[in-house]
Every structure is written in C-alpha cells, then in structure tokens.
Image (cartoon, rainbow, N blue to C red; front, side, top):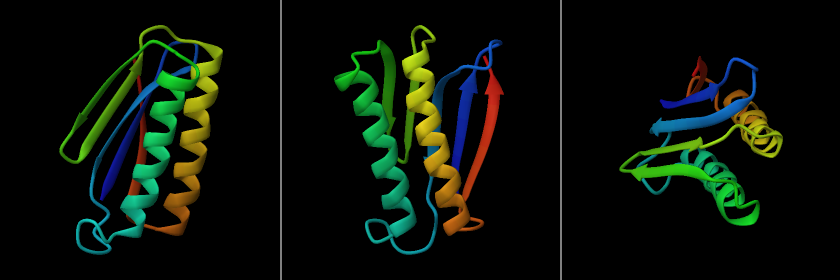
Length: 105
C-alpha cells in the first residue's frame, strides 16, 4: 500500500507530505499506480522548489519521499492541495492501494 501523510498547521494550511510504500499491483518498475503517484509527487516537489522557489526541505529515500515547507505560504498550500486532490482521484481509481492521512504540525 502507498501511504501518504499530509502535514497541516494550526491555520489549516498544508505544509508538507510524506509518501512511502508500494501499491502492489505489479512488480517494481511495472506498477501503474506507483508510477502515477510518483509522477504527481515529483511534479509537485519540483514545482514547489524549482518553479516557485519556495524554501522546502526535501528528502528522497528508497520507497519514500518527504517534503516540508520551511514557511507556510498560500502558494505552497495551493500546490500541496493540488497534489492532495490528485491523490484522492488516484485512490478512487486504485481502491485499497493508496491511503491518505493528515497530521497537524
């Protein structure tokens, strides 16, 4: 299962995410659910750090990526909301393979 945790602050702004795991639909490198999630996550991370130049900490490990904004912002919140929305659509498409949770930071 792909596990996603979105972080939000006390003002209800999204401030980051952690995505880990494997959907288990196919072998590594052949799984369309994993490829869909990976592509969306990388697009969001690159848009935040490269296109919008929002200061963020990003860590990429084996089967895991973590991104947290150093300062909450409206732009960052909206970009993360776009990822969250996309992941909700993917979780509907690949039922039981993607879990989305939230935690307050």
